Length: 190
Image (cartoon, rainbow, N blue to C red):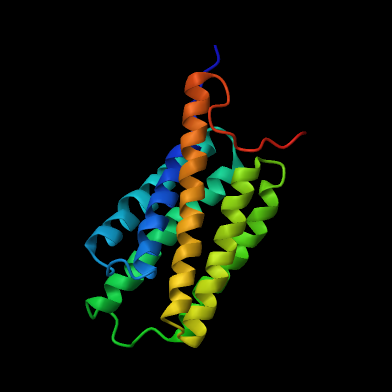
C-alpha cells in the first residue's frame, strides 16, 4: 500500500515569502521594525519552514529539507540577534563586520543552492537567484553601513524576491488543486 504525501513546498515558500516581503517593506521605509515582523520571523518564517523541511525529509527530498530547514533557522537566528541586541542580553553592540559575515555566508549558501534549482522550474530559480542577490546586497549594507536610498533599493529587491516565493507557492497549490496549469512556473524540459 503506497501513501500519497502532500507537497510541503508551498507551506515553506509562503513562510519564507510572506515574512521576506514584510521585512523588506520595512527596509523600504514603509514602517518600523516591530513585533509583527519578529513574530512572523519566529512562527511563519521560522517554524513553518522547519516543519516544511521535516516534511520534505519524509518525502526523501534532500534539497527541500536542506533549504527549508536552513532558512527557517535563518529566520529564528535573525530574530534572536534583534531581540538579544534590543533587550541588552548581549553586552556589546553587533559589529558591522560580523553582520556582513553573517549575510555573506547566507548569500554564499543561497548562491550554491541556486545550482540545485537548475533542473527545477524557472520560478524557483528566480527565487533563489534573487535571494542570493538580496543577501549580497545586505552584506554590502552591513559592511559599509549604507542606509537611505540604498536600503530602500534593497527593500524593493527583497520584496520582489519574497513575492516571487509567494507566487510560486500559490501556483503550486492552485495547479495541483485544478490538475492543470493555472499559474505558470516555467517547467524545465528534462
